[in-house]
Length: 116
Image 1: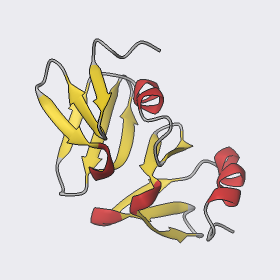
Image 2: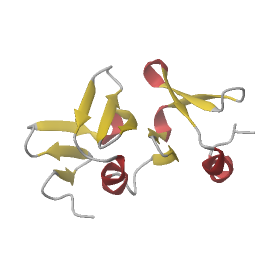
Image 3: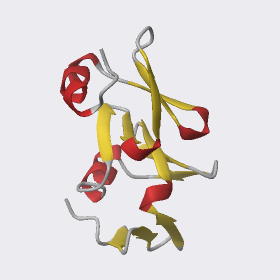
Image 4: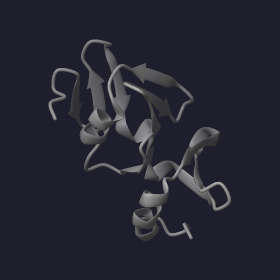
């Protein structure tokens, strides 16, 4: 996927060309899809909305500590704080929650120790 016209990845940062925004990858807690938009949540409470699909961000963040846990969610595993078995969702920093899809739950079971 070609994302060079949208964003540069270097030295642990995402540099968005047209928005003049620079975000440290480690500060990203979660990404949430909303049709052809992606909401990006940061550890300091900030939220950005980009008019790009979550698939583009999945490709950009490949090789970092991110996991696609649902068609609408990508999480940063380093911000993971807990798991709720009743709602099958993960708790992240800043009181954020993300649902796990049934199909991806079995793949995540091996990676994340507290999913039953």
